[in-house]
Length: 304
Ligand SMILES: Cc1cc2nc3c(=O)[nH]c(=O)nc-3n(C[C@H](O)[C@H](O)[C@H](O)COP(=O)(O)OP(=O)(O)OC[C@H]3O[C@@H](n4cnc5c(N)ncnc54)[C@H](O)[C@@H]3O)c2cc1C
Picture 1 (cartoon, rainbow, N blue to C red):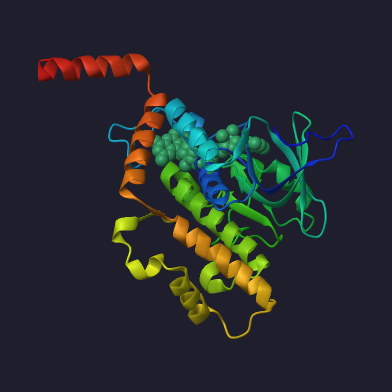
Picture 2: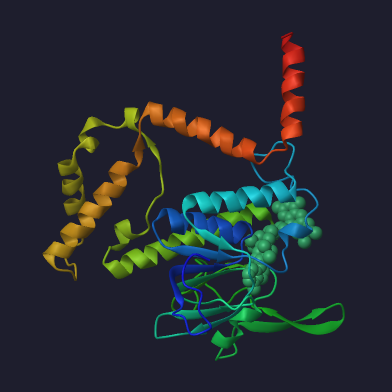
């Protein structure tokens, strides 16, 4: 971990978002929260549904499927590139640290504080027990003829929000967690709601709070939208009549939002640079012997 490692009297590390679980749901949530600038750490260790899968054949974009090790490595490389820290450690408990924050303790003795926690573990949510003062998170069900306890899949609402302010569930969620691609999609949706909630707290109104993470082609932009002044007009037109913020704060939010929107446009050269980088990053994760075999075959086929 890069931030302070506490438990022995050191101050605890602080994050805006702690994600428990680095499978499809948690990694997907983390890509969104980190890209929105939220300081995010993902803990990943313990029982994994993904690792029980023999070969992933129905995740879009892999025509012949993808082996689990490569897929997992790609997910983790992606979250790191997006700006998340990923730590191989098991979260043992999440407790309320203050009216709004949480304390997280791990198997390796890390202790940290977070404003928000996203649970993204298809199996086992025991670490949430300390938050379950009202006995509402877990239910009993029959498993192999015995009564067993499991996390109540309907505890969170349809957006992953829970009755505990700041606690979100990306997994387990009935149906969504049953396939890797739907788990990833749902994780992304939960990540976006976390971002939306953070932005609402800063004063953004509903129309703009749920940030859209789009990268746009500069050459397709109508020139009027390259002009800051046009964006200011747009925000003024779309602001509610009543905002509980000082004029300076509204201007600050608006200008930050305009910076964000303008940064979304990329030139053709930049698209080309990103394309090369994207291909290189995928190659990093492929077996080099396979790459050589593939190139030999291409050379043989083209007669070079
Ligand atoms: C046998 C089998 C075969 C499958 N085959 C397919 C298939 O072919 N196609 C398909 O789409 N889906 C398949 N699935 C389902 C797929 O694995 C899940 O839908 C998907 O992995 C759910 O993602 P998740 O992120 O919610 O959970 P997980 O994949 O379980 O990821 C959760 C992660 O959290 C970590 N973790 C757990 N507890 C903690 C903790 N306390 N602290 C820190 N980290 C923790 C785990 O190590 C894990 O890496 C299969 C599942 C099984 C069991």
